[in-house]
Structures are given as C-alpha cells and as structure tokens.
Length: 556
Image 1: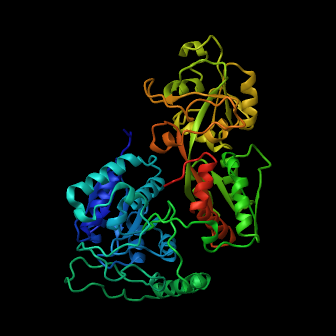
Image 2: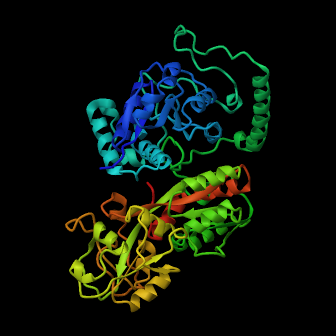
Image 3: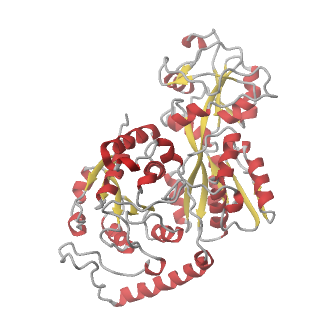
C-alpha cells in the first residue's frame, strides 16, 4: 500500500503494553522490531549498522518496568541515535502530568505516553498512533485498519471476556478507570517527577543482580557538577513558572499531541485552564475563515478580557504558508494551517531559539468543482492529476463536452490547500503553466462562473457553501466515485446550504482529506501560553461542535 515502510524499535518489557503497541503499529504498515524484555542499552548502542539496515525511524522506550530515568535515556539517545525519533512511555502509569511531558520534550523526546488501560485501549491507541504518524510524517491514520486489528486483539482473549467493552464503549467511554488485574498492574509511580527531571544518573547495568533496581550515581567531575548546577537553576526557573499550575490538579485534557489516558474532552471553553488575558494576534489558513467568527465570538463571551485579532499578510495571498512565515518572523502569536509543518520551517524555528508544534484539531475534505453546465459523472484522482499537470486539456478526453479545460488554483507556498493538493494529488510535481493562479476561493468561483470549462479545488466546507460551482465525485477508480457533499445540490442554496459529506470524509472513502492544525510557538512565553490555550479550546467539546457546524470533521 505504501512505497516505503517505516520501522519502530519497541522496548516495552510489559507484555500487555507491548502487544497493544505492536498490534496498533502494524495496522499502520509499520515494521515492529521487539527487543527482549531486559533492556540492554550497552548492546543496543553497538547495533548502529543493523538499525540503519532495518530503516528504523522511531525508538519507543518504556520507563516503568526497569525504573529508568528519562534524562538518562534521552542522554543515551543523543549520544548514539540522534538521527532517530524517541518516544517514551510509562506502562505502569494511567496518566502523566503536563509538566512531566514538557520536561521530557525539553530533554529531547518527542512525547511521553501513559500505559494502555483495559477500558480505553481503542481511543488511546487512535490518538497515540496518530501522534506517531504526525511525528514521522508517514501517512494519515488508517483508522478503520487500527480499529479492526485492535478488535481482533480483543476477540483473541487479550482482555478477560467479562471486561470486553463494545466498540462504542471503547470509543467514547469517559468513566474513571477501575483497577486492572494484569501482572503489570500499577502500584506506584515510577516515571520522573519534576524535581527529578535533571538528576544525572547512569543507565541501569543489565548485568547487575536483579535486586539492584537503581545504579549508583555517576562520579561527579567538574564538568558534570557545572552541568548539574546549571540544570538545577533551569529547573528552579521552570518550577517557578509552573508553581501555580502544580498547586491545583488540572482536569485530564486530551489532544492529538498528548498521550492522554482517555477521550474525555473538557465540555466548554470555560473549563480550559491557563487562558491568558490581553490582545493576541494570529493568522494563517483561509479555510479557517469559515469558523473564525464563531470561535472568536464564543471566546469573547467566555473570556471578555481576552481579545484575538486575525492579521493578514502584507505580501502574497492569505493562507497557511504565509501564516507560518509570520509566526516564524514574530508578527503573530500563533497560526492556523491546513498543511503540516515542513522540515525547513522546523529548522528555521530551531535557529531562532524556539520550537514549532502542530496540533491536529479536526479534518477537512477537499472538493473539486466545475462549471454548473458541465455534464460529467466524476473524476479519478489520476485524471484530476493529469488535468493539473497539463496532460489532459479538453473535457472531451474524459467523456465530457468539447471544451477546453481551464484549471484554477491558489498559489502554492501561500495556500495550505494548494500545497496539500500538490503534495497529495500531484505527488510533488509542479502545477502546469496552464493553471490560472487566483487570489481566493471567492475569486476562483467568480471566474469559474464565466469559464464553462473551468475546474477548481478547495475546502468542501468553503466551496460548497458558496453554491456556484458544481461539485463532482472523486475516487481512486471510476467505480469508486464518492461525492464531496451530502445527497444532491439543493435548489435553494444559499438560503439552504449544501452540506459536506462528513461521513465519507470521516471513514476515508472520500479520497482527498487533510487535517486542520493549530501551530504553536514553544518559547515559554506569551505566544506559547495563548497558542496552547487556543488549542485546548478547539479540542474542547464546544470547539469540536463549532468545527462540525462549520462543515469540518471533529477528531474523535
């Protein structure tokens, strides 16, 4: 199915946790390589050639069973395999604190996940595997494959029959976890705590007697003493910043970039923690224009002392790419996007002393529209590709009338939709010089209304609501054509809007869908504070409902 398979090296000594991870990852076409339960880092350090041959992209390391220290694991990782990605897990924990997760990320790991529990395997796996796919920039989550494989895992007795939940219970359960009766039942917390995050200790010696759970500290040399002092100063500054956060326990909140223990979304914007006051600027995706007014109004009702102002670029056309540029240049505080971050954008952020993080908050379908008079049953993705590459120039070649094809598109580089289309449909090939560049979807539809051979692509929610272009079904083959809208176009549009086919976007039967992102500047300053608060609001039940009402797919 995929041209390049990625491999994951699994260091999960807890049998049940390892089985869930292996099942979930293999459902997404990962090669999973398991190490023995007794993790021997000294042996693993000498396997560089084997790891390169196996095309391993990710180390998935559990801390709990061996009582490992996250700082030491990250230090070992940077010394031996910095080219790989590292995700830490704690199979003995039901949840981890946000402070713990942030400290682990500061030390170089991509994320920190708690253990899987019997009553939340499916929703937790969906979120965590989606996060891994985003980190590795592999492919979108094949959710149905994941569900099918995990249900098979259940049916083969991985969980006692009396505890087997229904799919609905697994997907939407928000009940508190009951104690589990596996041999890996958590007894105590074994992961790092903030006060231990910067301790300098050696990795466990695999040849030490079993009774020795923690090795002695490294002998302190002058450099290590200096590093420890600097680290302790950093820790004190960090703890001062989060002291208020630590004084009162936060409710469990869930986002695709967090290893949350269940699917419980906070109900409303009012339940989101750490929402700042003041004026903040943001920018980015034109597709998000459909929901900005509703979100801003809801935020203003809940937080009257918080003001959000959308800022358009002064160069180029508004869109995801321009928003990311403005965020990198310090002109806005966070941005919205319909495409993922690119390698050069991550690198530019690093050069400027901060980190960019993308958070998936929903999903969108891309609709293709033509002139209303064009009689065509639909297009395959291959045919659509040939049109925008300039290899098919007349509708007669596709069984339509004898009309020249006039393809329209927003500018790639500025528009996340155009970038996504070029990457996903054109396979990174450039647009043909026959493609007419336009400023916005409204501009494209005006021109489409005059050009009887015109064709244009945009967010289904955006383009269907304007009632001008005729949406056409798409598919991987001519016998699998799916319409981007529900039923047939209404004759009363715009008084009664055409509705996007959210069910087909959600189950993957429609062939062109993409995530919606909030992109946050992680700089431990006001930009990070508002970016994370906005993300949490969009991931609340209220935010997800607003997304769905605007014609987008909610993430759960």
